[in-house]
Image 1 (cartoon, rainbow, N blue to C red):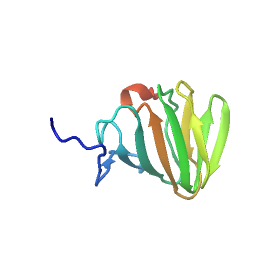
Image 2: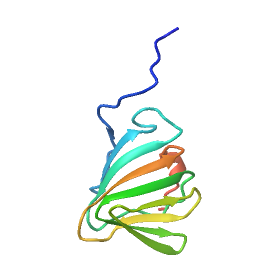
Image 3: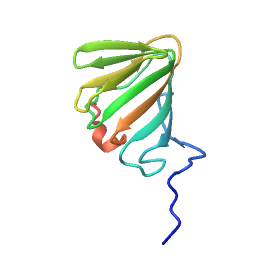
Image 4: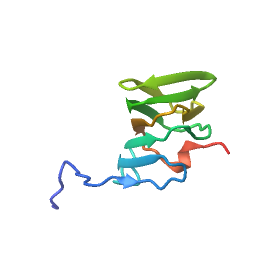
Length: 123
């Protein structure tokens, strides 16, 4: 029987290529470790950053470390600051942004893992 360890050490996260100035480092997930059950990513959104609305097929937990982040969720606006967290359930229509003048650093956990095919971004 092969020697299978009960852990996986990832010495370097997968850096997701972006064109909008946002840093995305996936530590665990489909792109970094082939894990489909969940993903964990560290992100830094530059000032005045935003992305289109989406309707993901996964739950997403956001934990803000530094700065503030805005969420537009099914006609409601929620803003988080450092030390706060938010769970957005699969199927919600959501838009993420940082319309503020400082970077926003945060962690994201998706269950199941983030997948470009199941995020359903609007044009």
